[in-house]
Image 1 (cartoon, rainbow, N blue to C red):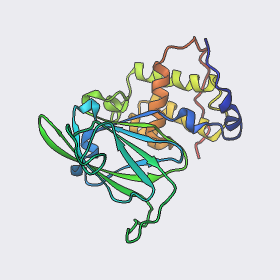
Image 2: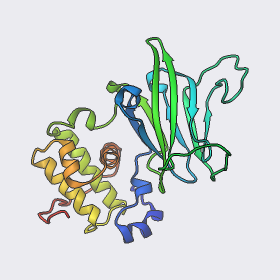
Image 3: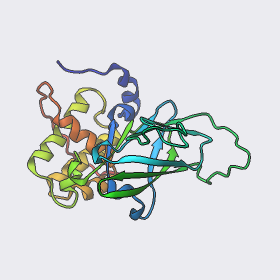
Image 4: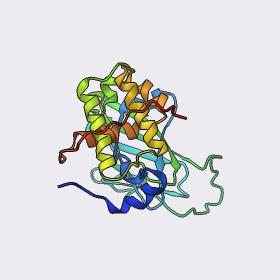
Length: 253
């Protein structure tokens, strides 16, 4: 049965796109990108009214220690017990999932804040291979992009970017992305003729011409999360959708 999301209609009519609904609910991040060896902290957005989970379950790592440099607007909870965070007398220290929540700013005398208003989150984990240090920069955002971040091994990534970022996409991936576009149009999450529709159409045409996935994404100015979401929707079971032309010769501005 065809799914219709009525709550998205008003936003779609105005903007042609509903970011809250099209945003991927889970963001997968290779563990190499989030470690201190990557050179800079990975930025994660935290929106008002929504929590953010950071899960290390896919890697099999256990969280041993967590530091949050600016607790004036972010709280941290875990699914286990960590000394200094949940209970100083942990019988079985360790956790696998962190949960961040945005709160109304508090005033802590003597606490300095970053000029950008963000906060550094440091996480130390352990597994059979040893210990690992992760760095995240938690930033304030106005709208939710995802509710869970999974730290994964490279071979666990469920994303077209894991195998197509630097080369032309295979026919199956192209068909799934194309079908995902049809799904969001059918569900009235994307309005034909809107600025985003033209960017997505241009992205699809670049893929069809044989451009690598990442280059096509950059040229059309759309996000990785949006591409992943379109790919995900194109793989979901759905009633048959009659394909309609999306590509256009109109220049994307």
